[in-house]
Length: 108
Length: 179
Image (cartoon, each protein chain N blue to C red):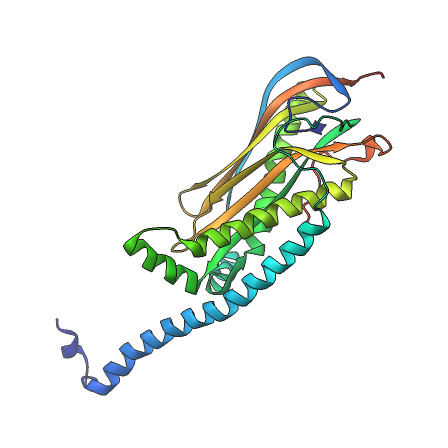
């Protein structure tokens, strides 16, 4: 599956539009991570545990999106967008969406 | 019931004042700690950002979808991500700033650090994939629920243009995060 956030894939042309696909996940931080982040809040800088958490979560949202595209028989997702929202209770939602298409390489 | 009734002996005046003073000292210590370590870490981070950015200065990065003259055989999404927090000193400064209004310089610096770091991670990922450019760059920032101070997630993403000569079949659907 090819994932891009442009409306085209370099060197390819769109054969068929399959429709909008999406994936989301809502994750809560755990206490261990919260304590570490609480300490880090004293001196500032990157909260590595949270960065990892967001990276893992976004990967899952993307996997859900690509498996939807697989089911539609697509081989690429164009114009992908990401949003993150904080929801109540210290949890965050990660959402990915895009347009599933089939593409083929352009002969040159 | 008054608190003093439950105690066998009321605390002396000096003990009580040490208690209040202790809290003040602890807060002051945290602010000083935040100031010292926060400033050192910030200066070191900005220096490191300058070096990494100058190494990538000639790499084309744009927020439009195409660069005339740069064409690839395929593309893939690339991204960089960082969650940043303020230090105790900056939180204190910002709370003072909130009283009078105006630009909150300490947070402005923090978010700049976050954005530059996320962008660099994206570019380093693109470099690992052998990309010739990154187009259509977008930033997304979200406060992920710091109780008093911001814990801001900065996400930067775009599409890497993959030139001919790189095995397109070996590209991952979703590249590994570069930290």
